[in-house]
Image 1: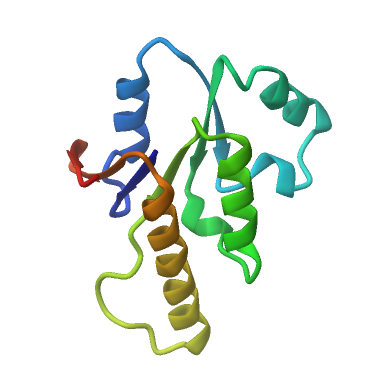
Image 2: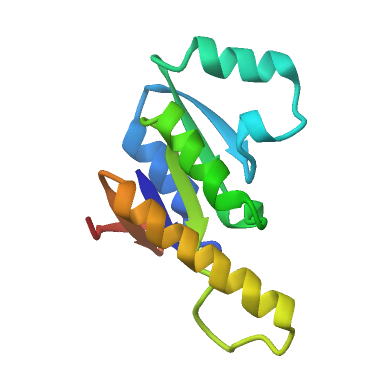
Length: 132
C-alpha cells in the first residue's frame, strides 16, 4: 500500500487508524535492510513479517541515486508493507539544481511504487481518498 499527501496532513495517523489492532513496526524514512540499524531490529522484522505490518514513514527522505532499486527490492520481500510519502512535487520549483533533481527522482520512484501497489491513498486533512 502507498499512502501519499502533503506535509503534516495526518498520513501516519490515518494509516494507524486503518490497520486497527494489528501489530506494526514503524521505520522512519529508512528501509530496515538497507541502513545501519540494530541487527536485532532487522531480525524482529524478518521473524514477525507474517504478523507484523512494516510501515515506512517519510519514504521521500530516503531518496538516493540507488533508492528505486532498493525500495522495489524491499517491497518484493515485504509485500504487505505500507509506504508513506510526502508529495514534494507541488508548489514553487526550487532554484537549486539538486533540489529539482531530488523532486524529480522522488516523483519517478512514487510512480513506480503506485504501479506496483495494490492500493494507493491520498490523505488530506487526515481524510484518505482512495486513488487506486
